[in-house]
Length: 338
Image (cartoon, rainbow, N blue to C red):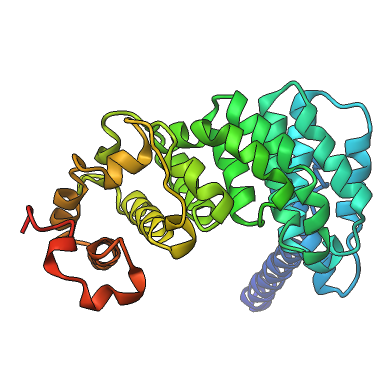
């Protein structure tokens, strides 16, 4: 009988050991499951840019070509529906940005393949193709080949009224110098560019203002811009209520135009302008630009104040920029406002 308590104690110890062993086994199995879950990679979904990006980054970190960009370009050559083409192009764009070294191994034929998507009937495919071309334009060796599509892109921007397409096309041009052979087409689409600038879609307006500012520095395009017809409320673009990003860009545009029209090269010709032209809206005798600029000098954003002052300075002596500091007060556009 005296052995019974001792036996019971031994049994309790055995049960404790078994419990501990069971718990340890469960923890070990849980550890294996978690470890297996971490190691397990989900299958690649070619339609998912996130999956593409993850796979590409992981393989690049291991120091080898992921092959994903080439696979996507090859799949683009196959017959696909519009949705699939859009997703493939979107994934290609991501890969180009993430894997520049791999993108640099692409060829001009690849650029032509992407450019051919601009002829697709679906606007979403066109937009994604424009985004992909912009991505490739960051690689110097492809710029000349991409420029070959300039006429087509200008045609799309001027004939399709789609804000997303406008943004994509204008971003491409703002990232890539327009070739001289595109200037005749630019003259024809100038009214469309001006309409985009006066639209109600801020992102497209900003991109249009940036492009027009760059074109205003081209001697052979300056008159076409200044003589382009605009709406009667064109100066609303210079209201302080406009978003700062847009205000800054239209002020830069006005400064470039002011400097261009004041250059000896431009003043050597006597130009005639339409009554509702950009020139008359900004620099005509009845223009209220001076009032708008003076109001912007006290704008809450400092860069707007500075840019407004730059435009004012460029207007002080439009007859001869070279001797601007010595201009008599009678030459100033701001006498009445002052």
